[in-house]
Figure (cartoon, rainbow, N blue to C red):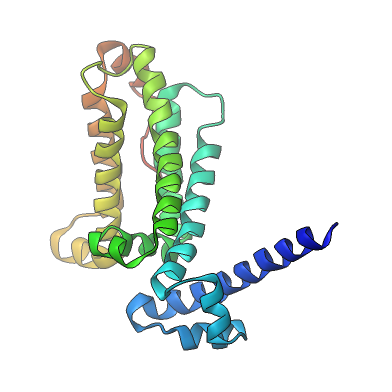
Length: 230
């Protein structure tokens, strides 16, 4: 290994150390309460060294969040690489997203802040580009089995794959946020089991997209959202 390659590896290793330290602070305190001083202390580096790698606290926050999005993308890729029929792959995606929510709640919550448009004005163009690439990868995973199902005549041709993807994501994400914030309140005060509602509403959404051929294939075979044990 040459000197240049060694230095690049060392630089990348330092960058990963910084992100690892930062995400611990962000998980504990969130973006607003966290400080670069705390991150530097956790990383055992000077604050100046942190700024050599990241221009702002917001850039560093997004760098940590991107770890979560990469993890989600890999879970989606695994869920859709089983060789199963496309309707089953759609079910697998629902399972994978809910498993991500259950197992990696801190990463899931980090996405909240990026959805606020003002956050985009606080981060560098480089980080925005990385987020766009990550989003493209994730949406590609979601759209692919829907496109496959449509090509097989299982999903109506008046629904674009991205439209179907957004509808399913919005339903899942909205209900998962309620689970995250007020699950017990909804159950105890309103008698609504949100995980069951997630399962039911996803199924209704998918059924509404299907052709008669798709309905016949789906009937009795698929539960399009996961259970807590998955």
